[in-house]
Length: 469
Image 1 (cartoon, one colour):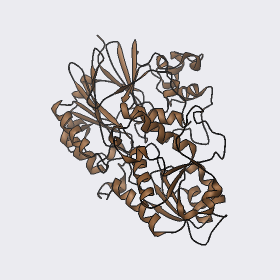
Image 2 (cartoon, rainbow, N blue to C red; image 1 turned 180 degrees about the horizontal axis):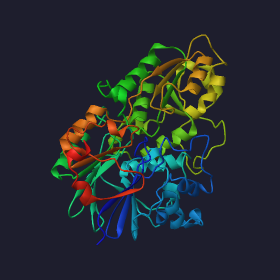
Image 3 (tube, rainbow, N blue to C red; image 1 turned 60 degrees about the horizontal axis):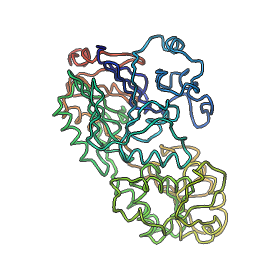
């Protein structure tokens, strides 16, 4: 029988792009399946439309496991080509699977390239968000079969099992897991935080891992940064975002812009209700409205019974400014609004303004009543930084007042240490971080894999703290 191993392809010292292969016997599973935010591709330099997976594979941006992908898209690329590029060979398994922890680009962007025979596992709510993202035109549909799974459900793969455990992050359905073999157990946190609306899930995660006597813990460490080493950051909470947004709307007579990540569907629900409470109408572009509507139609469990999901009056869809790729068969139930209507009565509206739609300001800020300033509330929408120069050029050009009120989706350094101490694994692997070595594991052995490295689980579980600390 083939020994249980972990192979680390990416996400080791970058934000996102975690691609790890676990395998035992003749079965393997990849988690996650996205692209690093620091990869050599960007919004301006994208992979070729018809040869994207080739571009990813040949730049070591996608897991070098050819059986995962659509053979037509791979073309002539061989295992030998990838072994040459990586300067090593990798374990191969007859049966491959994919686990996706949540629907953020850096965890799911490779899904469209999958072979139609590869099963994909994700939480039910994450699957709802994925369907919504596809309907919005952001990503094409994957040919792979997706199995939506419930919180705490266990999937049996024969040589090992995987129990899904929902965690607290800023998009619904985000889940880590405990993977069990006959000899060992491995826990993966996925992306997580303690200042969201479901922080109790993290204590439950710790308890489950402790009960399972987890040998190897893999945790994200996005906020492991030198400036936070000796300072506990003060995090904003979800409720504060909505309160700030409503306050801006009620205290300012001009137009208000809101920019949040649409995949944070629970926050979108709060924004809808806050807009209504402030006596305004929320204007969405068609893509954002499609994402919201399809997600709630497919079901988001924390939003069951939420009045925002039945509200057909507060949202108005802005008539298309440019051709887009929104599902042409999708019929949105919301009334449309023309840009001229918004310009004529700015105090009655709040505009959900995504980063790519900033040029709408050219009309909204120069036409109609310009006697009062507009306000822009930025809360975790792209761009993810509050210092983005392009955003601020637009805001400064039109004298729009800026309000930054992000919460972020990741744990503070001391919270990562608390989680490790609570679980007390034999070894911890911090990744999804620019500075993983800054992790204070409080006496627990740390392991920092190399890119492409395959590690025997027996050896990992046997590492002593004195070796690596």
